[in-house]
Image (cartoon, rainbow, N blue to C red):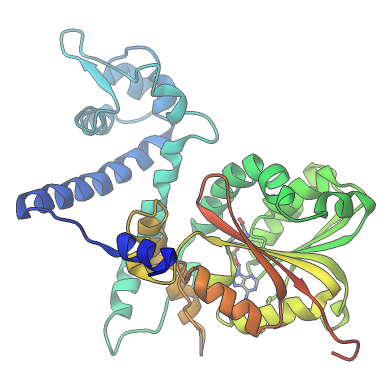
Length: 369
Ligand SMILES: C[S@@+](CC[C@H](N)C(=O)[O-])C[C@H]1O[C@@H](n2cnc3c(N)ncnc32)[C@H](O)[C@@H]1O
């Protein structure tokens, strides 16, 4: 038996577990979900920010201009979740120093919990989609918090890894960007990734496109505030890019956005069209297998499938003929589709945090493509 086959069998094993153990596991999952909801309220109101020293619920509420009764109930949920500590004698609450840095500031972990209410914005609509006579999918505008949430996540991820891990994993990319080339980011959202690149590589010219007018407008404002003159943000549907962009770009990126597309194959064909012959395409997708059993134990799999179910898949299926690939369409499917769309010399790298696969490929075209 090949080592790959053995490895897959091992990954697919469900393991021995008593009914009681299973009950405990399910209960702790539900508790985790409930805690996430409360954490997100704490992050939203900045409550953790004032909790480095012991304070009463009245002091906490007053310092933030919040209602004491709500703050107190929230504090007790945090005490039960062992995030906040309470001194019963003094009636005070605080976050211990080893936890505090992870719960405050612009890039704190607690803010990731805002994922839960963001997904629940369209809970009823998604639930209706399950019914055979229900809608096909859910429109983007049913998720008003989505672009802000995505921007927050992109800030964390791209600030940490884009210039090192990401650029470094594409052969000769840094030299190319330093020389001065034209780059396109497809589905750029509020444009964090191309802005980081535009700032670092002033000789290159960057384009960011997205179907969301509000995201593009926010990106344009931020680029202006940063005085970036080598970046252009435009609203476009990635499935039909401008006709005069054929062979325009040396490098194209699509970061965590191909699985969201209604027409992913058409988008990949468009990317090939606008790439110069021999140009490079970087695609970031969640690190997962196309085989669900093989995702057991994968740290990104649970939130990947749930994000998919409550957002990525329904927004794609909303459009007529939408493919609904799903966030976890997986490495095997991605490789097959890239090859079918004519990309070659494909290499796959796992990001340093193991959360994403970075698929780097080339677009070799015959002269009369
Ligand atoms: C998961 S977000 C990723 C955003 C960004 N790449 C990042 O890393 O933060 C997917 C993005 O794809 C955009 N999108 C979806 N369908 C699109 C289409 N047909 N054309 C252009 N953008 C699209 C969405 O509006 C959204 O901003």
